[in-house]
Image (tube, rainbow, N blue to C red):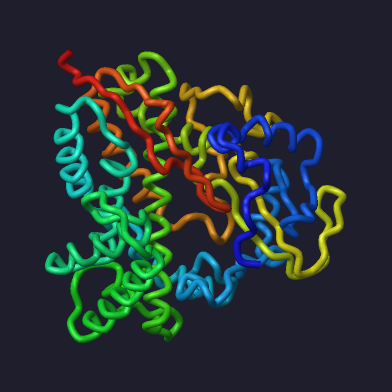
Length: 389
């Protein structure tokens, strides 16, 4: 089915910024509905979303066509047994220490202090995305001599601009260049191992098998998606923190409170908007008959606001740890990079909050980022004041 387009209801600017009243309406009136315009089933409740994510036999993740390139064969969009092999091969690498927190901290501090004197920054382009790319380069094991090339391709393909902020003519071509770079890196690492994920995947063995070059490239391509998702987590967190007077000051220096606030961001404004699946067999979901081959969209962002599970779901509260949100998915496809994503968020937000005493979103200039899967900000301009003021 590839990715179904977002519903027409999410095309309006106000609804794109705040889709949650529409989600609430759908949970109440049509929690599992068929949309003939998009030819998919939409699922809005927590219980049914969780059922879909945990039943990989009935609801397949193999939804991407080969036209999207290697990503279609990554572990994210594969079913067992291929998924299980790729995940087992990668899992040993995705442990604490895969990305050095000091690398993330250094990149964050450099960008925050550069922009603090000006009193403003765009959280996405000036902080969240560039730091996520620094972490991705280290995670993959991109050699220092390749960093400028890697950043050029990643910025051009994922943000449609150069690292300096100039627009590029053809972002799709840059994505192609990035995939070609992954192939080249795999070839070089076959000749000479180094640090990082690529070398790990070339050495690892699972049940007597080693990943092919195609397997490695597919999962490098998957990891670029993870980097953008982490960037959206950061922008969503800053947006949430800025909506509450005094919250930035409350969280500064309180590591435990910040960790809870990050988890609340994952629930309250999840960077994962929805997850697509395809029914492998006829199935019944909340009394609705789903046919084999039907596309199914599990609306994670709606499930995370379901009052059947969460008390006062439309309030941003961090007094307790919300440990049952679905922002990282669930089941066999539970996000493999959760530790790294949380670490990046904790480090970057801690450094930002330690250096600012006030944060104000320039609401008129906000640009929301909504795809069939991701939810964040294309641009999040922020006025800030240093903590010394």
